[in-house]
View (tube, rainbow, N blue to C red):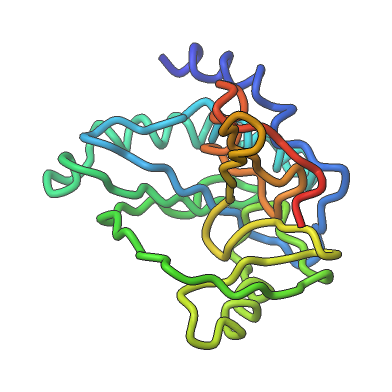
Length: 202
C-alpha cells in the first residue's frame, strides 16, 4: 500500500508547487489529515504536499517516512478515535517526524467573516508558525473569522480555503487561483472539476 500511495502522490506534486515560498524562520511543518471511521482521506495529496514542501525548503524528502508513520498510526489508533471524524496532526522537520497526535474533529461554526487586508502575509508552506494569521484573526472584531485579502484579491479564511458559487455562470464553484495555502481538499476538488480557479476574485 505504501508504494501505491507514494506513486500516486507523484501525479499531484505540481498541485502544491508555488512560485515563491517564504522560508525564513520555518523550522517545522505540519500536516493535518482528516480520518473518517479509521480511514485517512486524501492521503496521496498529503504525501504530495510534504514532498513539494521538502523540495522548496531544501530538506531531505521525509514523505515516505511520514507515510509509513501515518499507516502505522492508523493501525494502532486508540479505540476512541476509530469511529467518526477525527484529525491526525503530524509535526515534522528537516530530520523527520516530530509528533503524531489524534483529536476529535470539532466543527467551528462560521456565520460571519470580516475582510482583512494582509499584503505582507506569507503562508504558502503549512508551518507551525502562524503568527501572521493570528494577527489577522485578532482583527475579526465581532465576526467569527476573517476573509484575508492580498492586493484586494481574496485568498483564504484563517482555517480554510474558500469557494464561491457563481450562479451567473452555470452554478459553478470558483476558488482563488492564489490562496495563502494550497489545501489538499482544494486540490482534490480542482482535480475532480468540482471547483475551478479564478485569478481575479475581489
